[in-house]
Length: 434
Image (tube, rainbow, N blue to C red; front, side, top):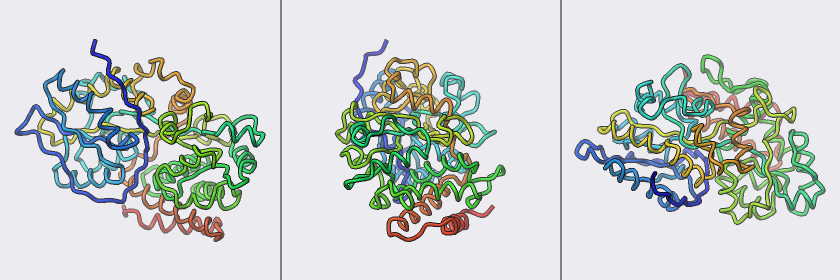
């Protein structure tokens, strides 16, 4: 039995802002086969928090295997461009974190190690992982491009005191109830629900789910962009209308990017927010656990499920290996270590996420009601974002269209079905031609 190591509390922010560029880093391990390089995504409240969480685990791995792991924690604003540069230059790390929504896009570059039956068997087998997490590891019908590391899902979080003051007895389960509660909360300079209108990935996550509720997938069965269907347009308009029509989102939210809506929520300025990994996220904003409650994200019927009752995308972080690693055996050992029950329990507790490994989920630490909502959502009512090579471009162009529509709403410009469709048509024209 390994020594018990203390987990450092962090806050996961799954914000995929594709804005900065940087050159790929990491050194090959040909001259140092007992060394691996690892690019970790920023999951904690800061890069330093991540280093404090991860370094003891990397030290333990070295103690067990003799393989040293050189760690670099990379901000989300840089990560995708760093990875893309590495895929073209061949100068990447041995192992890296990727946002699970990027799996098919990065898979299409051919730079990542395919997780065929032999490689999966080396880390304990495919059956160890939850099905919903495996659904976001690459294109259907192909060997996964990565394996799940941390799992997350959206839920509705509400400020208990604000609900009590507004006379709201229970959390809403439908969008009509969200709007009704939001109007009761929106007074005295406070708002009903927070959004992050300038956060492209968050925009995509929300309109994708609303799209499912309207019967739209944003891509056709053969992988072609389908941004202007009636369902897609209705989904985007429904999201913007929270500000433009129902007035339960403060206009300033149009400019909010990563985590700014959470600050308002923690400061009693906003009554509700759709978010992930609550316990660590809210505590980092100074909010005590007893101050907030949780409920499944709203669906038309009030009862989450599949299809029109989908209430979250499958969020999470995957672990990938660059195909040109000079230390494949060591890389496989590292992935097996990171997806072991002990590491899964420790790391997911540290980040407030849920293990994608079935056996690790049985740990009593994941029975907390807030995590139970996330776990149940992932098991029953979450859907993977389209696993197509153009997914990252989809996040950028449609996320930007939603951002521009929020700007229109904040400025008092009318947001109509026609104006929404025009923005989505423009976004579709920016996608790569097949």
